Amino acid sequence: MQSQDRHTGAVGLPNCRVVMADRPAPLAELDGYFGAATIAHEYADDLHWELAELHADDVHTRKLVADSAAVVLQEMPRIARELRDLGREWAEQELLDPPRAEQTAELIGSRWAEVEPELATLRARQEAIVAELAERLGRASRA
Image 1 (cartoon, rainbow, N blue to C red):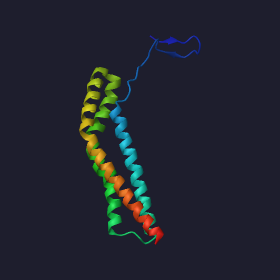
Image 2: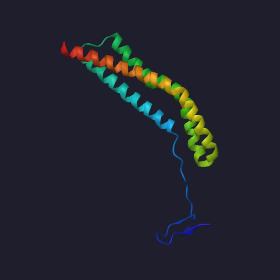
Image 3: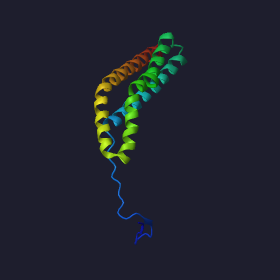
């Protein structure tokens, strides 16, 4: 049954409200890891370009940038694949089957507890790469 709003004249369903659940926190944390990894890789790439401009790049610095790219483009997506799939399932269930969405949110939380240490290790590796490239750039700039 449709009704017309007496104030706006809009036609629609009376008293139709949709309550949206909050997105599971681990999915936001996962997004944060990917955002940080992307920024770190872009910075590593910028540092390497600066090293190249100073003719201070070499096989090792190119390997460092390649390792940084592998973190954000290969390793993290591989580790996070199941979580991202669960996130898509949750988003659909949240609208169509809220009780099942709650179960999926719990599964997301337990899976996050398993993969977060791996992601943290990869991010630490990336930070070490950036630090080494920055240190090399500092030395090359003073030379």
